[in-house]
Image 1 (cartoon, one colour):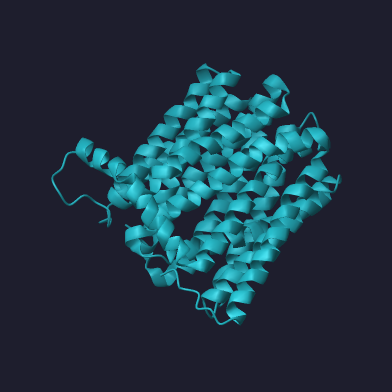
Image 2 (cartoon, rainbow, N blue to C red):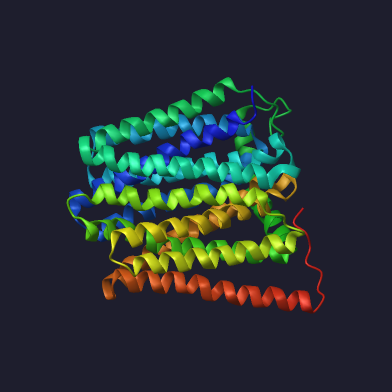
Length: 407
């Protein structure tokens, strides 16, 4: 079977993720009218990912990554369908937590397996294609969910969402490859799981020591953490911005804004493979500058009220958001295979931790100020922190300090 089919699996999975994000957020806000509960749906999704990321990397390094992805997809399909029968705020929050938990399990195993299937010399091209497929899924997922939810209601969106997860799982069931994490001994599953959790502390210490020995990896992860924190502001703000544009067509504009962002991401992934990075240093600096331009884009379109300007700058923002995400994945995939799952687990932990903290702080800042000021504060923090990190990294290079490679 063509290896690239593996990449389309995640596209199906992402399609479902983006559709349920629109449907669930619109459902919660329509039912309660509370920005606090809207933030809670995103926060609990993030907390689920945060808890899962603590051990998802360990599982990805010790078990068959393909099986982990299959189980996660079937679970997500079952979880999202619960809202058809129990569409109340408590169940919405519970579903968000569980979706975040299982999505982390899937994503870590998926990302860690990429170099094994496609080769470590092709990670930039492969990750660019992944980002392109993800962006296309985002466009169809957000715009499709916005239109479907606006026309026929959230239930059909959730049903289609569940179908995408099931399709992803069925494709994985048909695919066969020898994963490097398959168990080679005869211990039972229960004994293996028990052994995995008993060694969790040791595994986390090993990853921590590895990251501390690679200063640039530590710095790019710091930007990733702050970027996730800043991301809470626009994830909370976009549905509110969509309501400001048109209260009657909130879900439609919600989808259109993210759709324009996704088109920018697609454009980015067509350019990235053509860029030649001479060394790891240029790769890191490209990631840093992409993060700052992404934040500048979010600040700009939240400072506008014209829908066309908002969509135009959402497109611009998508270009640099996808660039940073792709380069961050490439940097992590340059690590050794035996520890790569745990490195991605740390990445997912940082992402979830940043989002969780952001969703706690963002509603407070929004209540005390305005939507525009909230985004300025959060993304201004990312720009300022990244500038400091760039100056620090430059200082290390000027001193001639050897910055250890991540590989």
